Length: 233
Image (cartoon, rainbow, N blue to C red; front, side, top):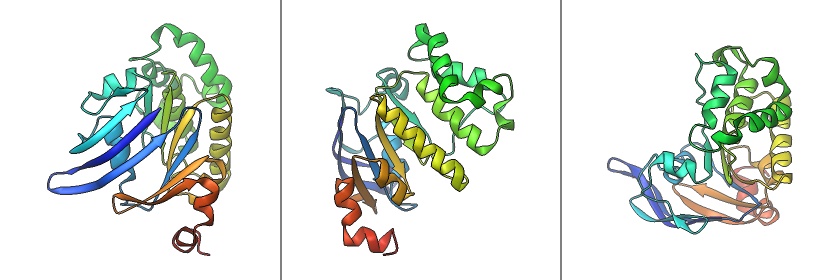
């Protein structure tokens, strides 16, 4: 579904990504793990067209998308839920959700908003509430719900558990399992290594702009380097 080969990207004179290769098959959860500053957000932004690649190719469902504008990439069905939620705080919950269908799936807006409310009943209760007054967990629900409004073919979740309480983190990973059970392909970009490996089919660890290791989630979990560096074992 998503194939990245030899990707290089950065800002100004700084190169952040150095020859990244990554494949996300249809219907799978692929986790991209790493510490702050490893290049995870730059990878997401390059895939979404927000940072222009300096080298390499990005192919989505057989079509080259490197060099396309972000709206065109979203319209193709590659939907990015960014780190920090990036909701519109002065718009209502309903208005934020409606904007999710702006570039894609406008004709199915009513049906999709009911699906989002079925997934997140709290959003239905707060439909007319300003998004900026929601709790952190509710804002994360809203950000994901807005992404689902576009009927994504591939959903990129950038640090969805960041800043949430332990209970809400559990709920977030349970939600990822449910979305995957419905057949949605997910690229999960996280610092939460242990729980990401529990839900992912495959995993890759990004260090200093390049993948240090990768394979099935079980293989990555068993790697001695990962156990020492990220799991404290």
